[in-house]
Amino acid sequence: MSEQDIHHRPALSNVLVLVPTYNERENLPLILRRIRDSVPDADVLVLEDNSPDGTGAVADRLAAADPRLQVMHRPGKEGLGKAYLAGFEWGLQHGYDALVEIDADGSHPPERLPTMLAAAEGADVVIGSRWIRGGRVVNWPIHRKALSVGGNIYVKTLLGMPVNDATAGYRVYRSDALRTIGLEGVDSYGYCFQADLTWRAIRAGLRVVEIPITFVEREIGQSKMNPDIARESLLNITRWGWEYRRGQLRSLSERLSHRQKKDS
Image 1 (cartoon, one colour):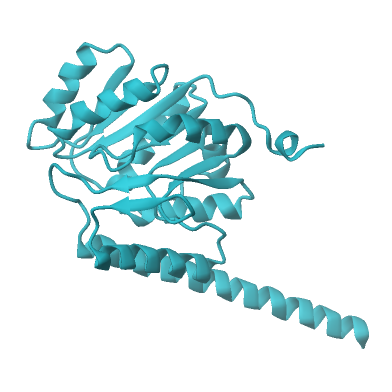
Image 2 (tube, helix red, strand yellow; image 1 turned 120 degrees about the horizontal axis):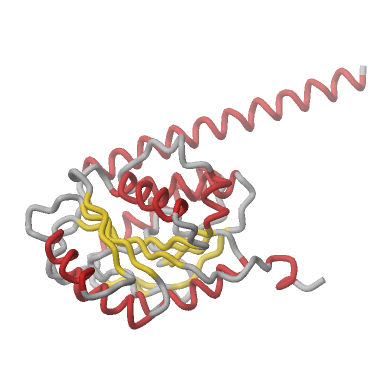
């Protein structure tokens, strides 16, 4: 049996692209046009967090002209994770085969989405990765690159996770993978949400693959990253790492104890 046969999954015929927005009035029409050009057969759901700049009205206007575009109006800004969880729930209820995460600011290239969806024919989760061969970041200062690379090395080392860009926000999830992961217990809502779901997928034995992308820093608007988000990520990942290492030590101790009893 070939490697392709081993990893083959059912074809993806019904794809939903999730686009969370908060104050993205100027970026939203641009990214939606690129998504439509790249994956014309996909549906799109804008997750609008009651932006004060009028993004919701722009989304509604665009949806009125595109039958494959819908808008979920949410009460306010609750974090990226909560927006995606709401989108996942909606997509699963409506029978989609795969759900895509993509930022509204244009940093994630929709042009790579066909390649990522093709990769999902042999994987449960596909990550658009900045930090593998062929991936790169454009227009980031050196300190931000160092922070991202260092953070991902920390995650990979602490959790023993074979993923180079666990914090990446450009992803394809097969619907069955989300059901396997189980979203009920997810309690990380900032940017560590991505690392959380990666860790859950790995622990569930799912196949996660990385596809190189060129990440381009936004040209319009302001980044949502702030020190509080970074702090939440660091604390949560450290806690998960401690629990993982403690579990490893407990398992090792139990195996040694069992061996000693067997030998005595």
